[in-house]
Image 1 (cartoon, rainbow, N blue to C red):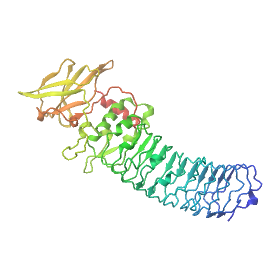
Image 2 (cartoon, rainbow, N blue to C red):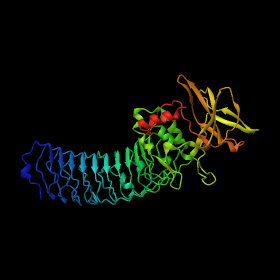
Image 3 (cartoon, rainbow, N blue to C red):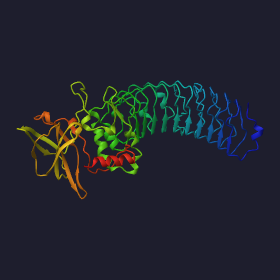
Image 4 (cartoon, rainbow, N blue to C red):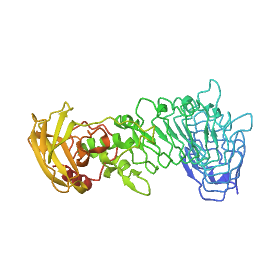
Length: 473
């Protein structure tokens, strides 16, 4: 079925025509006649199989053309040549395999084209003629969607016709290979979507993004390691690495998060080990400073889970620093996380039936005293005593059921006495062994006020209120 020109010939002042969901099978030359002020034409959900040369003659002002969900498998050079004002072209959900004839691109005359949707087609590769490109010709193509095709690699042919490209969607293809320096030479790119492909390895040459990049989506791939060196120094708005095979958290993500990047790492098989200590510290430092602006980002970290092994999974918000350990005898690449304590235990000695503890102050923050306590099973406090700031030692007698002796700094404000920082604990059975590992630390129950620069999602308001009650001593 063709479009009857006689039915449209009198519509010389119409600006939009919707012919979607009809039974149109072909578009012959000058198919719609002369419509001088037509801006928008919708031909989606028809049965179009062929578009003849100059099929859109007479539509000099057309800016948006929708040919999605048809049966187009071949595009003839010249079929869009009359559309000199076209800005948006939607050819998604067809059977198209290429947009050129070996010598010329079908979009060569569309100098105003800005957005090109070729998703859900049958492209297996990109050639130097897939997108319009001529020397000294000012094309405006800034957004390309090639998602849900059959592409297997990103080659240098993507550099033709994409000089000012800002958004590139290559999601849900079969991409496993990204050739060196291709992505980095898309110098105007701000958003790159490579999600749901078969990417198992990346190096700095293959994916060093341009400096302007703001969003990078690599979710749903097979990455076991992410090369942090590829990221620009400027913060990215989004780094999406969800649903990969990353076995560990990389502490180098913390500066990115602090600078405002939104980092998504959910649904990776990450171990609950010492590499997560910086993230737990960051999370706890900023939790008391949430604002309405940061609540909306909190679900990213609220749903983050790690694995202790044997099916023992924990959410980040439930983790304590003391839970996160690395076996340095087996995990040689595990980082040595520097301690972040206000205090340090200098000696811990048995004196008859008593234990003598001596400590020092490391923090330059305002500390007014110390709180010493004896801990039982399940971290239950069996005995507690507060000391003034000028005291640096104490002698205590363990009570039945004692497992650890702990000390932390306190500070006094107009609202009362509050605990601060990290609590240091030493097992009672290990007297004489100075605490030297951050893994024996306990997370502080109240933290000093810090400037809010994070872009992480925190708790729902009800949970936040509950956490605040639990965290105040």
